[in-house]
Image 1 (tube, rainbow, N blue to C red):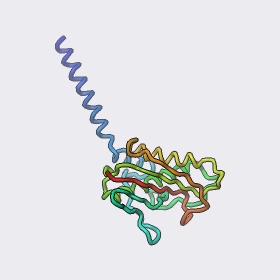
Image 2 (tube, rainbow, N blue to C red):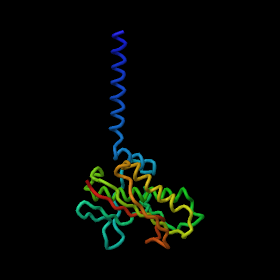
Image 3 (cartoon, helix red, strand yellow):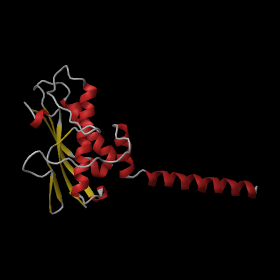
Amino acid sequence: MKKLFSIALISFVTLIASLSFAQAADTLEDRLAKELVRLGFEDGKLPPLSKAFGPYQGYIVVDKDIYLTSTAAQRPDGTWMVGLVTDETDLDELLYAVDLCVISAINRLKYAADGDLNRIGKIIHVNTMSPAPADYPHLELLADRSSEMLIRIFGEEIGIHARSIMAITSLPINMHHEIEVRATMK
């Protein structure tokens, strides 16, 4: 009986240790790498940060506040997703563009936080912009996709945020979709 109890105790301790290890392995970087692989970034790493298209910076840090310039959808091969959004636009393609916008924003956040996403204390606000007709029926779905992905990667405590949704006539360089993010550092 003592042997059985010892085996049961060892099994229980092993189970708890493995669960703790599994939870510890679920870090922000792990979640981000998983999303990057899902989106076609084979190595699960953020690409080099793209330069701004004009006389401005991709991000500004004031005290602990991070202000990102709007980020667009850049595919893993470096090309940009462009074109107006219409009722005929493939929704899966547009959702992929939204995911890539979030990755671009996270990339800028990482640079703003000196290379350490764990320094991000809170995503404060997300503004989604699509060059779509005013009656486009999927604007909220696109905004939800951005919000859900930020929460999935950063976790609920840091990732949940306020947001705005805009349908606009066009975006610079004919971009397909863009998001702006405001965040703060710990």
